[in-house]
Length: 375
Ligand SMILES: [Zn+2]
Image 1 (spheres, rainbow, N blue to C red):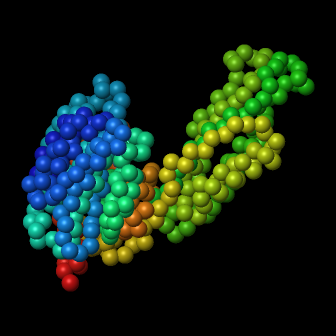
Image 2 (image 1 turned 120 degrees about the vertical axis):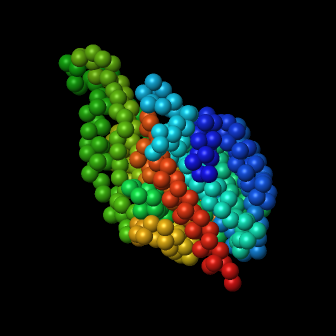
Image 3 (image 1 turned 90 degrees about the vertical axis):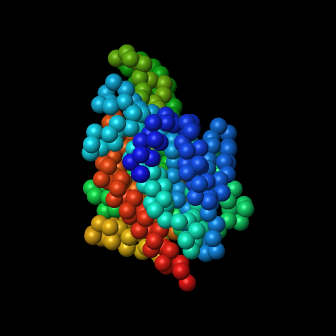
């Protein structure tokens, strides 16, 4: 069933923020199993909130149906929204990120009778994860908190696997901050250094400080905070003219050892120490989060070892995810999904075998959590 659902979802061209009928498809599936569905619309984005209420804790499965653009279609071996099955793989944009994960969880759910669950099961499915992420999970979470909904556990089907399904699960993510700097100078003739104010020369000592800074050492869950310059531009194109200004873009992926505000202060201090005239813009697009492993993480680990006969690794690696918004509820968060190797790339694909194993693990999680919540 998970293979069919993956293909059905991939064939809907749901590039952010368009859900292209994916939400309706999931909604109908859940309605048949006694779930109560609600569409929460913010701006142009539709989100699905669906719940099967029981006495006992609440587990939310969190996912997104939106996908990133395909890139040049002619470079794909199979059309990106074809869901082509070559016997081993299902091809298409969103197979890995993350329609496959959603399909597996739906399929796992179909193996049980939701009436037999000892816990409430909810779904938050958004169409705004790959884009600005402003009208998706963040708003749904606020709405649920406002209604007094208490969330205990959250399972996110984002791709987390390195080699074999379940070998790596995530219990946190780093923060991310984008910084855009304009160094202001004075344009002039290269032959008259006294009469120019060259922003390229001024930025060099600043860059030196920026790149040699040890922001933190990381901690047992997070690697040290890292910085990458992503764009630098200056110059008018002539050999004998110094530029008026220089534009620089850089990004930091940061651990829980430092805050966005602290990064901002450090960068500003470097600029001031070098006496650089500038304009600067800080865009904190994700705060880091860390979810202390407790009962639910143990349930997930146990379930993986039952299906795969190996122990899984806990990590906080990867880009950002909507887990950062769920963290606000104080619930325990685990991200477990398929391989991330081909996501966002040309020829994104997922192994059929991988879908089957992931479904087995999700099913096992439902059974094991049911046992844990039985008393
Ligand atoms: Zn994703």
